[in-house]
Amino acid sequence: MKGKHLGKNNETFELYKAILKLKGLDECKRFFRDLCTLEEIIEISKRWQAVRLLAQDKSYLEIAKKTGLSTTTVARVAYWLYSGTGGYKLMLRRIKN
Image 1 (cartoon, rainbow, N blue to C red):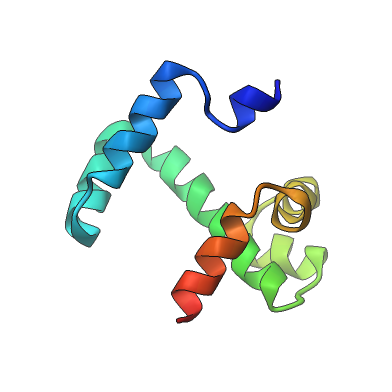
Image 2 (cartoon, rainbow, N blue to C red):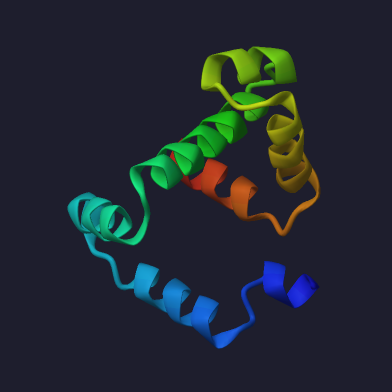
């Protein structure tokens, strides 16, 4: 199961490689719009917003109200922020700089 989370299967690895080839915001928006439904993009965006709010020490309830996510989803996002593979923390550092 852990391998699936890290994307060790060929299909996931190929997706990651494709994402790394994107050049700029416009290409990124176009690719993800073709790849995902609007609902999926909105859900991913809400999770990222939750990460950013968690990093500001906002409460789960406050984050749930602001994003529309359930507190269960906020808790899941928090778990991966604090106990995951470090991807959220990496991106938080990069956008801060």
